[in-house]
Length: 280
Image 1: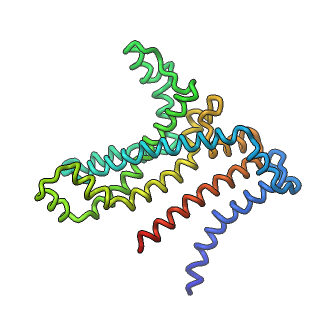
Image 2: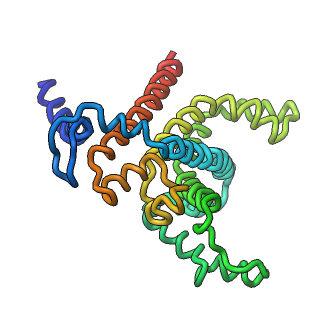
């Protein structure tokens, strides 16, 4: 009877995860012409991947993009959760407002920001023109384009951190807050001595979850910049997409996907190690 319950879940897991993973690894070990798999080539696709002069810059872009979005989304999510936790009136309305970015799909969020920042007819250009600064053209410069997609991603994803923090805040004993008030402690003392220590494990979990999300992010970058200009916003996940659908390099895309999978394995091991410590 136990196997009857386990079998459907195992079948779905094999079909959705293990099967595509094995196929990706198999493809990376073969020559490909467009989407046709040819003869066995061993580790040639991995040799081409690690000998590519653009790979270090793509890894650097991935790190800057992921860590930059994390640095923005983490405190924004924590601050929003603290505001909601201490709000007594209009709590549902404010929570819905804070959750609005996350309720959109990545494609919708990217399209809205692409329209807003359009140099010809976007509202941002109308504002900057009225102030005498000229039209906005953030996607024409490598640096500003990377900053723009990082900010968009942080704006879209911070509600996920907010929800996790909000759940953790509601587990803090109210007696501690009352004791702090009796001792004359203010908001800053409560944050440093009560809130942050209690949220330490949650903060680590949120960091791991968001980093895994950012490392695999494709849609917002695809909608706004497609990895440009001059490859300045092409992260490793965007490189997989471009190799697959623009260059039709199936084996190269599979090798890069395996590299991304290794990064996700490392993040997962960190999460498992943290969970074990937390359970102890």
